[in-house]
Length: 152
Image (cartoon, rainbow, N blue to C red; front, side, top):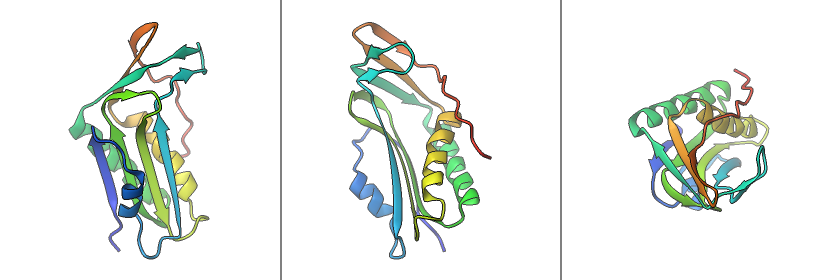
């Protein structure tokens, strides 16, 4: 069966209901949707406020790497039905969704939770997306310092 895979770099507002509908099949009984959101207050490390993030991506390579992540997810969890990996770019205010990883499957016990977690961790690891954090104390490009341990 040809299951839906949605990959997108977009400046558009995310519509979670529409996205979930695109990866839901008649046989779908479970979905997990992870949504990354711009924090207005960071408490990990040195606490600081953020007014917005400016996201940039090299779209052709980013989408290619996002497809790679989806392929890896399907290899590790063959019962997945739909997969969506969406990354917003542009200026995003605190409280705004930035990233979505959505997975669907027939049953909740077939790896759907693990697949969504793997998807976001892997996206952060290999997809060329950059963010500049802007707040009352100035602006700076965020270096990725969180390297999740992936079970590959």
